[in-house]
Image (cartoon, rainbow, N blue to C red; front, top):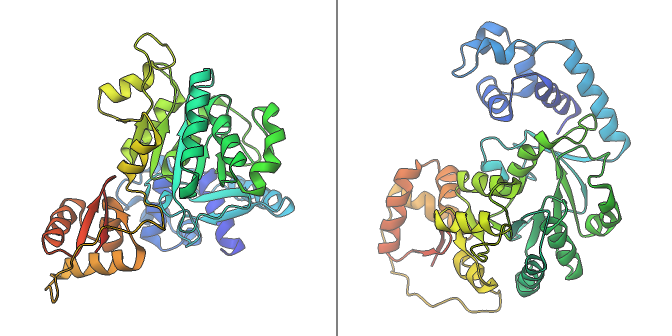
Length: 367
């Protein structure tokens, strides 16, 4: 990403009432972030969903100055950054409408060909929650997943520490800039996490810790992974918000059940009861529902029909799955530019023709 493009994206981010999804829409219509800042207001107002309130402060020079100051912080502190339209942007996060237009990071993060799993829960964790979380991560070590969480008290830090213990990559998503640490007591864990993983945020150095930032952080936690696990939660809390966001992204959600009268299991039990989460009683449930397979385990042999004739959309899907391996239905629809309602029938026809097979977790792969 060029410096000018980064400054343009940061300037757009500073404009009040202009969120990530609106910024992407403007860039899509105009052609570039730099072009948006140079475009006449009349043309911007002609874009569907872009009103005068959203672009009112767009050309205020104060925002450009703030962007340049943040750029100096980024350069002086060796902060990594990536734009939403770049190939190195996290794969699953880029398909979320409200994903950050710029994502900042520190550490040694490598997400290529990695299984991603978010684990969240209450800050007031019980011994049962700690034990379940630690045992779950220990059991799935052979799959080498990346463990994502929010670096908070309780389940979050338990998940990060368990990942470090078993030499798994782990990512902490922060609700503030990379020049701060919250909670401060967790600063001692940062070197270990950055050594084999790191931190993500879309908040600036000028964004101090505030509880209202949790929603922004939680969308990153939910968007990065193919599944979110809620280990323990009261009837209200940030982990339930993360689960709702994950559901809105059409990702899998799991919840660990607890006793009916346990206040720290009430949220999980409600998620399961209202069918907003799969019940998770062991790692085996997770492995089955996500269709994870050990590399050394041979896949079931299925005889592929020879000389099968495929329709145009079927050819697109087959080519995409052949090049990328198993993938979620929604991502297949986006990458192949086929409406979601239509791609479902396309996949069914291909399954009947014996060229693809469905997997647990709304995923498909070629045979």
